[in-house]
Length: 277
Image (cartoon, rainbow, N blue to C red):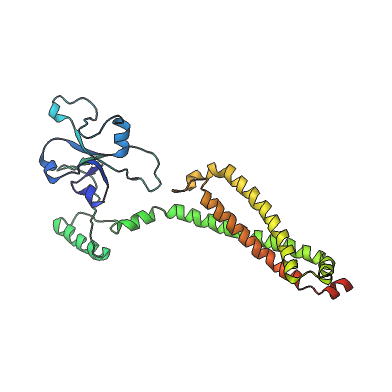
């Protein structure tokens, strides 16, 4: 990456070793480089990268022409927050007359709209033919890079919510049907002294038992299929225990709620009416 002397400090990169570029380095004449941690780890694994020399292509004729590493900074995901390529990066000083499109970064406490307006005015004052586009806060650029992944996650969340609703509806339907088929039995239990709470607990136990078996089967299936979800995850392990525990807790809670309604209906059965029927 071709950068100016204060680029690394402006973006707040952590300096791991050595130093950042200084303005004097621009006119020093000697090629100097700042590299990232992946570069240092790959090419200088057994020693410090500071003072290390390397060149692109052939070997320089003069010793003074060797590019020298003066700093090592933390790795930055230049191609998106989800970049996992591990490619090493080199930061090279921008020299006068280098062609190409430039990306300008400003660190300021002023409102972004005010800064962009002032920046446009300054650029027009330098050269009215220079285009200025995609101007805005860096946070917006980072946030927009997740748009496609966010849309996919919203779609998966919608399907997951629908599946959860259908599961709750299924549990409710099965238990409601079961209660209707066991009306006489529940009436007998009530007649011989079963309490309202005992009848509710009986139906709840039945519903939670079915839900528990389903949750266990689902968790086993999720663990087995987790490797296929790796590409969809960001900073979350496919077998993250906290996620599995939270999902299981939500499923059990929904199952308990779906089971409670038929249980409440069962508790309201009049023993005399049930036995007469």
